[in-house]
Length: 137
Image (tube, rainbow, N blue to C red; front, side, top):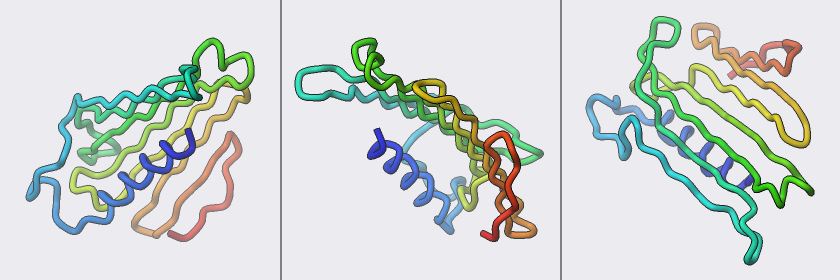
């Protein structure tokens, strides 16, 4: 599952690093597209992972792209290591910078994580229920 999370993160980073706006280039995906992966351990289906490109929406006055990653283990694997993760990421329409990152874990352990971005001051704020000191981007 960590490999798929890494791939998802890499996709977001690569598109966020682009200097050409999304309106000037065609994205390789469209709102509403979904990729679903079946995770296997040998012959056992361990779970499913879905990556969705959701419709454009306004986020704090900015038209944003929204991505959702969902991971869920099968009932059989739940007995050993239950995973129920949802990650959502927002980026500006031009994909030049991230706007929000959230992660919700409700499997073996429970965690809620949020990272907000203050691009005027080049700061990121991490919170896991308790806000941490902002860090420089």
